[in-house]
Image (cartoon, rainbow, N blue to C red; front, side):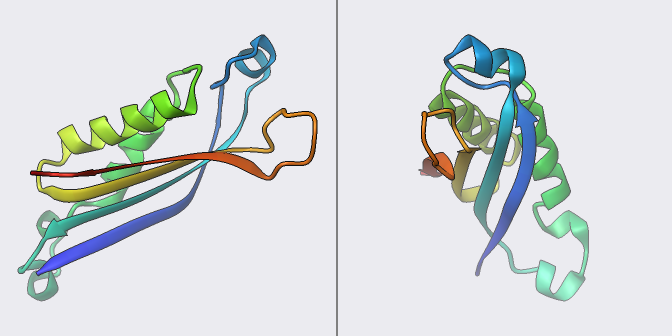
Amino acid sequence: MELTIDLTGMRFYAYHGVSPQETRVGNEFEVEVSYTFASETVFESDDVHDTVNYADVYGTVKTEMERPSRLLEHVAGRILHALHDAFPQLTCLKVKLSKLHPPLGGEVHSASVTVEKRRE
């Protein structure tokens, strides 16, 4: 049996961007993570050791968000790889990173990048 856990609405203030203003002033970002893993025992055991603890997943995302990058693609890829490496039991992983109100000279809610990886 497979189980999927979604973490949505994780908000961070970070310094990702191409322009000097973005790296100096920063911006708000939102991250969504969806991860799947095989689980038979968690439904019966009620034990955190039988799941992929979303507090640990959040901590990994937070660490990667604290490292500035120029491109959203780079940050999203780092988050994906860090989670993939930290949790070898994951069979599918999806990360969506959104920059809220990007400085584009007009009203834009967000610019987003989504990356996905399945374990072979």
